[in-house]
Length: 162
Image 1 (tube, rainbow, N blue to C red):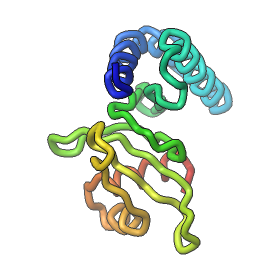
Image 2 (tube, rainbow, N blue to C red):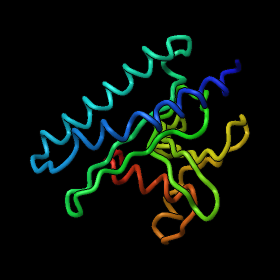
Image 3 (cartoon, one colour):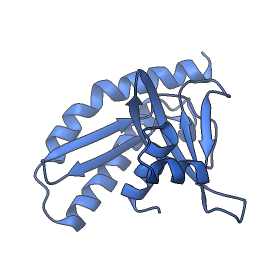
Image 4 (tube, helix red, strand yellow):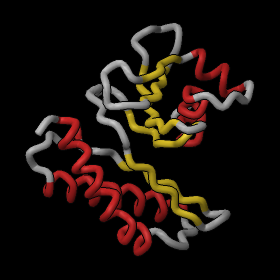
């Protein structure tokens, strides 16, 4: 089985098993510290379970999960990484659909001193199926464009990275 096939099997397992976990533990949070701790620890439990069930896949290549709690509408948003990503230096921000295309969004610190972060929007399992940028992402975000890089930048803003 290839790495991509193993990733897809692990992702399917995650999709099927995550809903009961989220519905049980992450409802009605009002204290920001408790909310942060529960999200962090629930993510760790999910990651540990996934690495135990799929011990043949290196932990860094397992699907990532991003949990966001929206207090104002009492909703839990769960993003599960859709596409295999070999880049070890990126942080998973979440997933979303734009138009008819599904994207995974990532952020990493830049090696270029002219800008702080590089944003990536991945739309397939292939090595070259992604968009990447830094200043472009910020510019598109601030003009209100609904582009993949603007969404990635917006997720980084919401996470407090920027």
